[in-house]
Length: 544
Image (cartoon, rainbow, N blue to C red):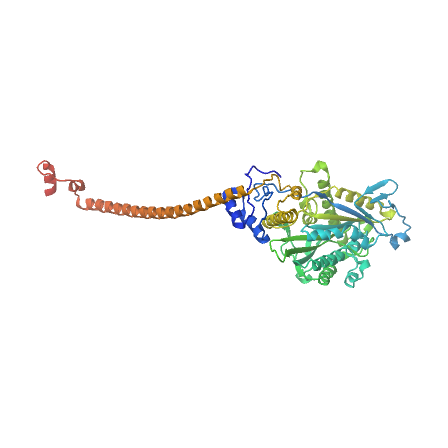
């Protein structure tokens, strides 16, 4: 950050809010109300014989540039399920090899892939959650958006990884809990641990079935097809989507179980309980500090269970099941195109086809936007599924190239106030630890301190005299303003009188014209001094 050349702010040994306000009115601060608000709330007065202070950066947006959000990649975890009994009966062999203590997986003999996390068939639900999901819950309390999405072919274990068994989660059988119940449990544990904040938690649950949006928390008899709209900030909103306010883990789990019961499933040749829709469970959290209502932020946590990619030849789908499979693959194809466009260097700056499908529009922030995102790619170890497994691994590898830019979701004015409060707090800490002379070396890391000025008692006297002169000038200015207002009022009254006189003059002229027409007398003769002796022709005209 670079200053724009404003003159430095000279502050005496003791700085009070009125003095800061007086200085700010002379142009040293852009928005001094925000600045003073930060000081008032902190109840801070600078004390000591001298203070090392500098420009306090970016007190108005036009002076300093805010640091850009940190760019981070989408994280990818690969999870392999065990061979199921059907695959064992068919004589399928394992085609995957895992490198010990390394996030690598080898398909066949030579197709190696590296990811952020790799979990083999022996890793538990707890291992998956603790390694790659738990940190996202911590980010939620910092005000960041988060997304976890599960991808893979049909029957690869996506729903098991994301949901587990809801009965187990409600019954506190920890081992079988999936990602979503564990996220909810830790979320409410975190809320209970943060007694200094007020939280509002709302949840929504929808599915994309045959490219139609369905509200899973709405009773089936009242469900209507929903549409996607954009708000004025360019974000996504869904009018009519029901958001349920919850206050406990068990209450949230009941909403999740209710929605899951209404989700569309069906039997295919590869999976007896195949999900026929993409499901998105969203948690919306608002938090405010009890002692400071300006310290508020909000975040959204999307938990996405995608329907599995499938081939009609293997699923033997017909009729309605075939149509469902086509729509599922269309959505996943659009998602793959978005991932490819975001991940390829040659595609940067080009159009990203978010609008090709409703799934990609809903995940617009999660892929290349404002979110911490984790993809869990679920795969099968059976050699009969080698081709689908290879496609999933390639899909996941492309997703690692996506760069997101998460930011804290806070109102801009509230964010500026909080930034100033943090600066004031650090200055106060430096004063306490450093004694009379304060060295603000720790703030250099924030790029807020650029030039340091030392102020002696003579500087304080000069400032006091300037303030006295400023007070006298302000009083004179007030008096002149009052006199000017009186002059303006008088001028206005004179203008009104002039207008009235002009109107009267016009009316008299009109009456004289009418009189001339009625009598036929030359009014100019009447208005002049008549000298009959010198003007005999007027005598004849008057006597006629």
